[in-house]
Each structure stands twice: as C-alpha cells, then as structure tokens.
Amino acid sequence: MNQNPIIEKLGRRLRLAVIGGGSGSFIGAMHRQAAVLDGRYDIVAGALSSRPEKARSDGRRIGLPEDRIYEDAMKLIRSESERPDGAEVIAIMTPNDSHFQYAAAALDSGRDVICDKPMTNTMEDAEALYKKVRETGLVFCLTHNYSGYPMVRQARAMVRDGFLGSVRLIQVEYVQGGKADENDPDPTGHDIPWRYDPVRGGPSLVMGDIGTHAHHLIRYITGLEVTELSAEIGAIVPGRKTHDFAGALLRFDNGARGCFWVTQAAAGVENSLRIRISGTAGTVEWDQEIPQRLEYKPLAGPSELRTPNGPGILPLAKRASRIVAGHPEGFHEAFANIYSDAAEAIVARRTGTEADVLSTTFPTVFDGLMGVRFVHDVIRSSEEAGRWVSCVTGTAKD
Image (cartoon, rainbow, N blue to C red; front, side):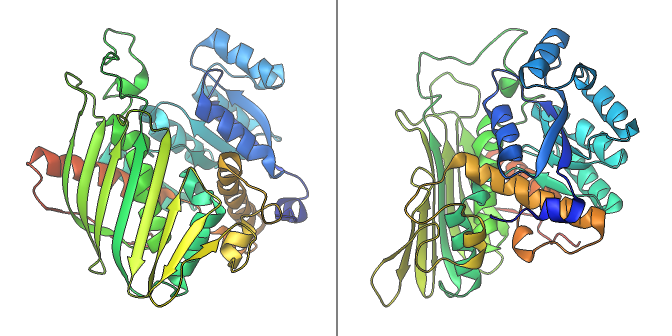
C-alpha cells in the first residue's frame, strides 16, 4: 500500500465522523486506528458516548474540536450534513440495536457508512437496511476485519484461481475462553452490560460476537453460500442462560459439506479463529493467532507455506501487505485494510471513477444481511431440536 489513491483522486483525505467507541471500548480504538493508518481519513467529529459528560471528555481526549464533539449521534448526523466541511463518512461502533437507526439516518443524509458487526439484531432491520443501501447507491462497509488479513485474501485468491479444485469440505471454528469460569455468572439487574441484553445485544451473544465472523470467513474465502444447516446453540457452563456455544453441520450451494462451531467458554483459549478448506485438488488452512502463515497442501505434492509478500503471493494478498516478507503484520493492519478498501469505493463513487478491482472485496450490506440470516437460521434449527432447515440465499444484485 505505497500509493494513496484517495489523495490522488480527491486531493485530500475523506472526512470521517465516529459514533460510539469511547474510552473503555476495545473495538472503538481499533476503528479509529484502522481509519488513520493508511492516511485515507481524517477523523473530524464524534459522538463517542450516549452519556454527555463522557462524550465531551472522550472527544477532547482524541483531539476533536469543541464544536464537533456531539452528545447525541442523531445530532451529529444532522449537523455534519449541514456543514460545508462536514463528515462524508459515518463510522458506527455502538450497541447492536442502534446500528440500524444510525446507519439509516446517515444514508438518508447522503453519508457513506462503515458499521461494526453484526449489522443488525433483527431480520426486519437487516432487510430494510439492505434495501436502503441499494436505493441510495451509497457505500456500506461492514467491519468483518478478519477478511482483511493478507493470508485470508491469499486463500480467497487461491480458491478462485483453482489451486483447490472444487471445494468439498469446510471446517471453521472460533474458540475463546473469556466466559469459561463457572464462578462468573450472567450479569443481572437493570444495568447489565448491553451485550447480555437480548434486546440490545441480539438474540445470541456467542453468534453475534463471534459466530458472524466465522460465517463471513467461510463465505469470503470460498464464495459459497449455506443452503441448509442443522444446529445446536446454548450454554455449556451450568446455570448460564446466555449462549456461550453454537455448533452446526452445513450444506453449501455447490454440494460441499461443512462443520461450524463457536464458543466463548473454552478454558484458557484466547482468540482461536481457524478455518480449513479442502477441495478436489488440495487444502488450505489458516489460524488467526498465527495470521502470517497460510498452509497449502496440494493433493499430489508436499505441503507449502505462503506468507505476506513471500514467494507465491497473489495480487489480492500482496495489495494487503504493507512491509517486506518476514516482518509480521497483525490485527490493526487487517482492520485498516477494510477501512482502506472502503475509502477507495467511496472516493470512486464521489469522483465518478473506477476503484481498483482488488479493493472491492470488503464486506458489504449484503454480507451483513447474510450474517443476520445465518444467526436466525442457527437459532431456528436449534429450537427445533437440530432439524435441518433451509437457508435463504441469493446474490448482492437480487
């Protein structure tokens, strides 16, 4: 990423406003750092908290001018749309139940949108937001940041270039241990964290938090859609009501079979997102905790290793690699790749030019819609004792 097409086409960086993600938020800091890493955006305004005092102090802490620190997200969208130097892009990193409200308002004001996952909690909101993006023609980017890793993009390119032949088997797991302690009960009372509230956090904590990431990773690399699934979802820790586990058998639109499981109750595990994809000609394997390594195992040859900017790297992965081979890149850089790709699409739309085709694989509103559908299909199957259920598929052009 040695060139900055944003400066070349627009003559300046995009103006970005952030909603949510104030102090104490891990993901908020990631969004802001990702936005500025490649020099594509200037953060010009923010409503970092729904609590007025916190919104003001957090806005000052990140260096926003006083008149562009907002205590209300909707006021930010209205005010910035009225300024000649107003924000052109709105980034949303708030509790899940507010994603639709803020994204819809931003789109209505003519702002492009970058939104944290899951896109929405309900199917109704997901479908309405998908329709609104299609109607406005604006850019909507969903931050499934794991698809920004160079070796995930290498895997995608290898699948499309035929290295694996026809995909036949897919295994994905996302395993964490943060909720493994049996002495750590579900929060109770009126002031529970929003993630544990089924209205604000969504119908399944584990599926909204990490299940949507695993599902998107399958779709991003393979280009396949789940057509049927048989699932179980619930709690592994005795006495817990919040979902901390989900597993499913999957059938795909090309006839492939898959196995999906996610949990936040695996004692001692940190952030183990892994995927294995096997085809008629070979297999690729990737582990998020060792993100600079992609193993390729051809049917008729020895195992091979791909690394960022190393031998055998393909253009999609090379574009996502910033430094020379042998120097590791990680979570921040992968997140930044999503922001940078979205910036190219936004500027191309605003200038009437074409974006680099290699920048067009970032997650969109359609990916968000498919993720919400998957969450609800897993829950539906589990509620019916694991019955195989049909999943609605389609394309982004439908």
